[in-house]
Length: 110
Image 1 (tube, rainbow, N blue to C red):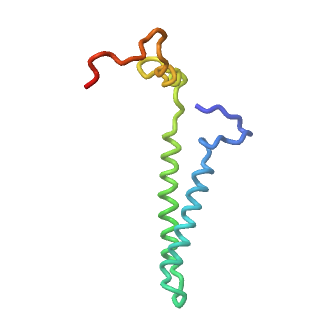
Image 2: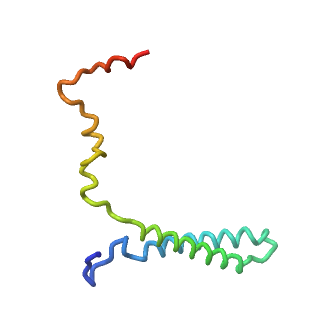
Image 3: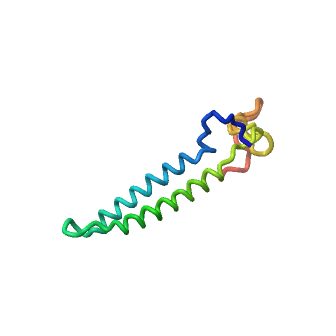
C-alpha cells in the first residue's frame, strides 16, 4: 500500500488527474471533429448533438482504458533484476570462461 501524508501531492499512479485530463482532451478532440465533419459544409447548421455524443463516448472509453492501464501497473520485485537462476543477465551469459578453446567443436562443419 502506498504511504503518503495528507498534505503531500499524490504520485501520478495514485492520482486520477492524469487519466481525467487524458480523457478530457480525447473527448474534446472527438467532439470537435464530429461537429465539424457532420455539419456537411458551411451552409448547414453544426450538429452539436453528434458532437456531444462523440465527446461522451470518447471520454468514457478513454477514461476506462486509462484507468485499466494504470491499475495494471506493478513494480517488479527486486530479485528479478539480479540475474539468478536460468535467466542470467546477458552481460554474465556472454562472458567467455577463462581457458576455453575459441574454436568450435569438431563435427559441426559440413
